[in-house]
Amino acid sequence: MSFTSPIRRRRDGRYAVRLSPQVRALLGSLAEQMIPMIDSDDPAATRLFPPAYVGTHTSEAEQQYRELVDGALHSHHHHAVQVLTETVTADSLSADELAGWLSAIGSMRLVIGTRLDVSEGMVDPAPGDPSEPEHAVFHLLGVLQGTIIDVLGAELPDDGQPASAR
Image (cartoon, rainbow, N blue to C red; front, side, top):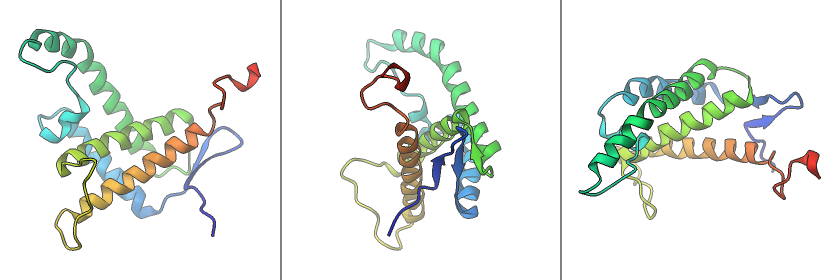
């Protein structure tokens, strides 16, 4: 039995995307839910904007950091989610669009993982647990994230040298 990746690089440099309509609908719905969450005070979204400094004597440094990076982080997350929303039904993606998918999926996974209080030693919920569907979505996003990383990583040279330099 062979496994065909749902995302693969085409000869023309674009990426073919073969996902079921249900997965595409789920991704689109999650992306639409992310848009208002990025600018909200929802505790689940805090992982999208991690602190640079932690501790009682670092509040001024943290404030300066926030002034420097918050706008760029908000813009980055909005752009990635927008790319996913606009291309969720596409059969092929450019490298930049696929990078947007990777970022948006990673952000969605962070939010869901925060809601579920995911940790290293965590076990899957028992059948019938109310959090079971959200765990399934978390795992699906992880598989998609891993697939995109594998596809993009396959293009990296093994020795750190560009192919033209060998």
